[in-house]
Image 1 (tube, rainbow, N blue to C red):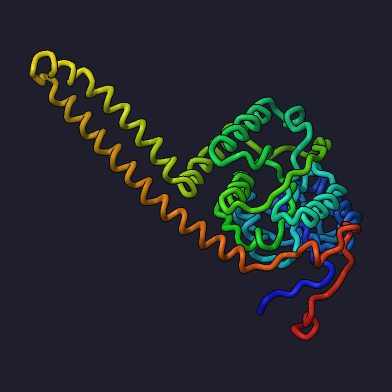
Image 2 (image 1 turned 90 degrees about the vertical axis):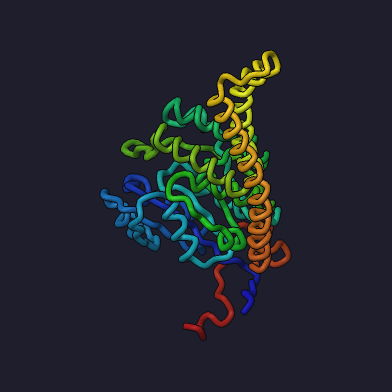
Length: 335
């Protein structure tokens, strides 16, 4: 039966955490003060420092996710939790809970499916120069491959509609989950928005879990896999072009000798060049075929997305970003 939304949407705040005992209590309290009627969910990813206890004492609903990695946590959250609007943030205190109100307001007024809180000053406070440089390079690479929809694909502070959450496949396992979210929105051409927000510093005793080279490599691999899945023609054409250029490089001196003398003295080189050329043609053909498959998959995802309801500007209050509590129709009877 179709889900009917009343005047005020249900809001869920999602906080994936790993060893954030020093900050999670204040973060939960901040969201409770900003969105007093929102349900706050903390998913503890095998913390060893009492994160779950601190979150529970602050009033959050706490669940443990045993698979290590932010992507696994987000996938579990999106599958478990039912709401009309979802807000996801980190538990390290670098994102201000007070900004959640503006994220919700922007999501509703612009009728978007995702609002990304871009990080003001992230390059000056990325922890290490490697992180800052990686942010710049990966954002540039994203805009080159997938389009100019986003300027900060690694922001962990976002608001989503139910349509987005329940149509998002979430196959990533780690910090590359934000990249996958952005590609999903670009792939289905969903309405998105960006909101520039302050990016805070970690307090004393809180440490970043990012590894510049390990996580950077995972993100680069995810770029390649997402390009293969969403833009197979461009992906396989690029590889095909590389094989063709290599083939031509081996082939040119052999042809020059043949046209000059009428002989082919370097037969193995000629055979290798022809084999590389055939591989190039096969890769190009695979790209053409898989491009049609990718388009069909995108159409199916879009149809599923369209079958889901989401709060609209006509059904939700825009003047007051703090939603009042309410119950779903029939909720008491269902209980």
